[in-house]
Length: 593
Image (tube, rainbow, N blue to C red):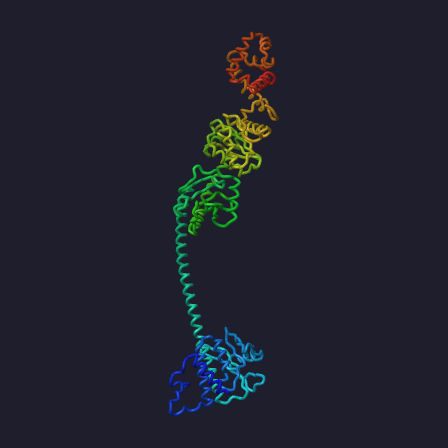
């Protein structure tokens, strides 16, 4: 039976692989006509031939599992054997190979693992003989064949079995070596690809480090030269080719280098500006907002300004971002220095104004004003600013200072609990400062009071009260917000609490001063005539009779009053203020003299 199986296997693999070569162990000559017939094959010959064919099949495949399967299926070619189990060494673990879809018994697997790479007996139910044979190569153990026999094998059968085991182990070694070569080739390819990628990355890193050092050195040079904001934007534009700009935290342009600068520069919207600042502050690094790449200048967390690149075509790369970040780092000390200078200047201004409002020595005040670059020898106006939605803190004081500078006001500044005070060297425009503060604060809910002009430092405390009176009158009027001048208040100047004799005198002097001076120089009675005219309700006949003069004389005097004072008796407001002034002149101040 074994010989028949060997013969069929031999012919099967001979057809698959081709005829055996002449002179090989499996070759036999064809019978010739009339010649002698070849001798009949013995069972041993057939078994040998079958093993040769099996060996060719084993070495003809490079799949370890297929090699083990062939050895198990054709183990009977070596004798009365049957393959009970097969194992392959996979990563140091013996993995069983199924036979006819069945996995080997657990007892067999346990025994094989106990042998630890050595050959040994295995108990197989119903078989008097069982053996686990290691499939070894130069690389070590490839696996196991567990073989059982219906009878104890002869010496020749043991030898054939050993031959089959060696061939199987050798075929596994070849397959293993081939697989290792393939794996090694793949690993080598992977390592070469990895090396190429690392080399490219190294080149890129070296280039980036070189660019970073160049940018850092360039910006450090700009900072060391004290070039300021314009030098930074000029350097950034040169490095990136994109327009570079600096804005203050309120969105006003401080410096621009490059083409396409908007003229005029758009007026910032305070609400949108704050939203943009908070959006950028929440993210790390530069942030793209529409066509700009923006980063904040914020040493110690306080936003001092905005540095940006105009990138309408979205061309910015990592080098552009690097240059922008280094420029921001270079600009930060510059803006911090300017901020510190501004705070020192503001403090010196504040101390001087505080002393002026309280009353101070003139010589000391003049010397201190020269130290801060301000001329106190001119006439001055005291300006009081109050905004309903802003507390009078340092931030609001700086806002008022910026607005005053924006409209060309030269001033000193301080603050009180609920308002900011300016001492200005010229009469403020009726609307300019208010509109500038509206743009700065984003709301119109503010009031400004302006004093009359002061030609003496000693009078500044009194003019401070005038500015407060003007502000208070405006706040209680129908139109709460805007600018009010004390010298335009008219009758309101002497109404309300806190008025004194001096205020009454000032009011009378403003409305009747020229007439009083004329009467004094010419021994005339124009003020008395005007007072009688108002007492008589503007009736010409009654007035002329009370003064014992002719009606034409009265008409002449009233025309002189108009010419000298510049006031129109037909104007309702002028008429009211003149009437109050004559009444105060007569009753409170004692009339003529």
